[in-house]
Image (cartoon, rainbow, N blue to C red; front, side, top):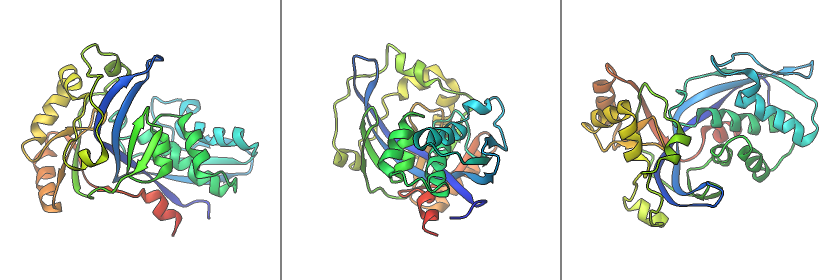
Length: 280
């Protein structure tokens, strides 16, 4: 593997989210389905002979110490005793605060790529465990395949999904996930379903009602997108999305929405482009 190459950190969608209970420690028990989309951040890693871990392109409003790529690199060094340095350059394309997993994906790409560049030989299973220390969504990006997930997100099983064209709207708001999960009106007792039930069309999102009532821009985006196809919320949002059977239909929706919204034309993918690039 070479230094200085661009590596993808793809976005994800939650195609379904059911809340089936709550543990004594407050964590919610979930069933969800993750699929990657072709929209990506791009990260380049440069060797640093001084042994320091630095960020070439800090995100406005995020301190370097708190940046998830920096935290991921430091976590690898703590895990292994490695003394190598790196300078990290992030081309940020994924919207922040939209529920597309941008920060988590950046962290996962950093774990996977630096594990190779630094020749650490950490197993994927261990990288997923380390990723959980950085955020609940990081392991799915390390796993790299569209997945059915249960529990608090730690039970992951590969799922084969149609790779449809997708339009995503990012409303001008940031949904506070902790706030949504603490709402009294949130559904917390949904019946568990099987993977086959989801594939047959059961893809409700138990956060939808609470989020759309609390955040008017999300509700407005759902209404506008529903003019073109079945509009859904990813996770707790703020992004909403709709699937299409052809690129032509998706592009028609994108054209009809782009004057009013921050909108993306993309496609669902079952294997992370990060792992395809590792094979190049």
